[in-house]
Length: 354
Image 1 (cartoon, rainbow, N blue to C red):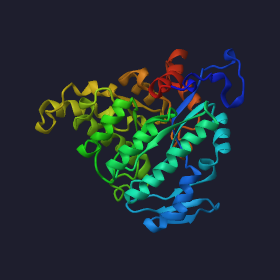
Image 2: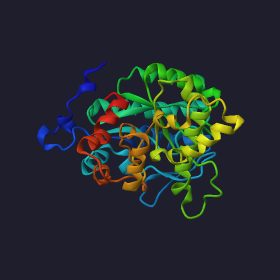
Image 3: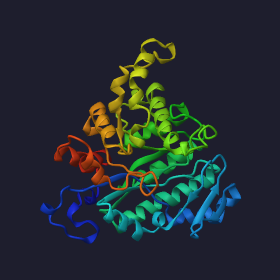
C-alpha cells in the first residue's frame, strides 16, 4: 500500500502544525457530500436524454429538478463542487480530512449504462482530488447497482485505488431492500476487499405521507436508516458476511432505539426465527455517525452501542448537518478527552484504514 496511509496529520493542506498545539490528532468527517464537476457536466449534457429535468436555482447553480423515481430537488451549488470552497469550510469547521460521497440524485434512477458513466465520473474525481490533497480527502466507491455485473466491474477497478476506502450504497435501491440476494455479490466482494459499506438515505419510500412539515427529512431519513439496518440484520447479510463493516447515517436512525422490540419479535415471530444471535448483539455490527442533533441522545447512543462504534460523520453541507462536529462532540456529557478523540479521530481512521 502507498505510504499515504501513514501521512502526517500535522502537515494537512501544506500547513505545518505543532503536534502539541492540536487538541485532536486528525479530525476525520466520514459523512460529507460533494458533486464532482464531471458529474455535474454529465447531468447537464446527458441527463435530460435519460429523464432528468435540469434547470438552475436562484443563484444560477445547476439544479436537478427531478429524475425518474426521485422526490426531491438537488442544487449542485458551488460549496459542493468547488474544492477550494470545500477546503475553506473544512478549516472553518476544524476538520482535517473528509471522505467524499455524493447525495441525491445519485445514479440509480438512470439506465444502467448512464448510471455507470455517472459512477465513473464520481469515482475518478475522488482519485484526482486525493492525488492533489492526499492528507485531506479520501473517496467512496459509487456503483450503478441497477446492474450488478457493471457494479462488480467498477468495484474491481476502483478497489485498486488506495484512496478509495468504502463502498457507497443507498438504504434502498429503487425500492428494493438491501437484503435482496441480487446484491449479495457486492457484499461478498466488499468483505473480501476489506471495504466497509457506507449507507446513505435516498428518497424515502413513503414520500406522500411525509410531504408536510419537512417530515421527509426529520422523520423519513432516520426511518430509512432503520429499514436498512433491520434488512441487513434480519435478511442474513450480517451473519453471512461476518467481517463486513457497515456505517449507518443519522446515528442509526430508528434502529438502535427499537432493539427491544426487535428482540421480542425474534423471540416469538416465525418470520424472525432465522436470526442467529440475540438481537441486541447486532447493535455492534454497525458504526454510527453523529447526526442526532442532541448531546444527551448521543450520550445515550454511546452507552447503548459503545464509544468505539461512534464515527464522526456530519452530512455537511446539507441544511440538517452537524455543522461543528468538534464542538458537538465536546458537548456530549461525561466523555473523557480520550473518548472524544476516539470519536473524532481514531474510530473513523480505524474503519477507513487511514
